[in-house]
Length: 226
Image (tube, rainbow, N blue to C red; front, top):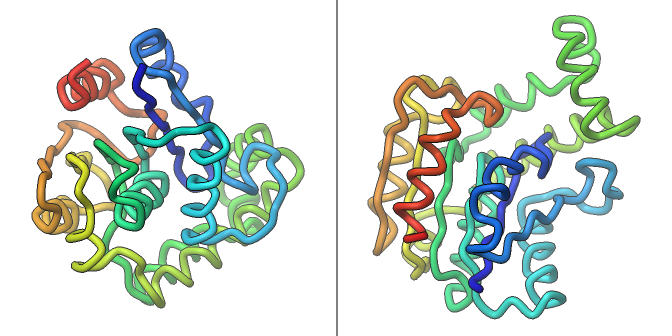
């Protein structure tokens, strides 16, 4: 069977993909690697470049010569970087809610929402939720992801040359009500990839937990030709 990597977002958890695993188990060999620092995984260097290296190491250790990728949010960014750096290893990549337009100003805005003290004060339920997902280190994870975003804003890793290096079939998707990722930036990125398509999901906000699951599964079926 072909191999499908499911890459979660920043502050995310591979458990988000259980409904996808249920649908495609037995059709694909499914892989849900956990990014370092998430879900109790140890911290080393948290950066997009380090996560790309982590995925490459995972594929090498598991003898995955070629893979397809579904990436949500940051997972999509990591997946696209991997496809650009190792074009011979990725046959298809689908992303959802992946922010592709980064600048210092945008990064500062996004990083500012990850202050653990503010989260605990303003949205204690979210703080409890992050504690459940990531354990006692959730505050460190928030702070480290904020630094990751700042670094990405200072030096985006996906530009025209990187998009042009991608040889995999690609589909970039965004929700019409996503308040973090714009339709325009997603479309502009998709048009720079040689073999790509673009989709806007109706009535869809950013959090993966809120997606229309049957719609996502149908789009995946059509794209990956399951």
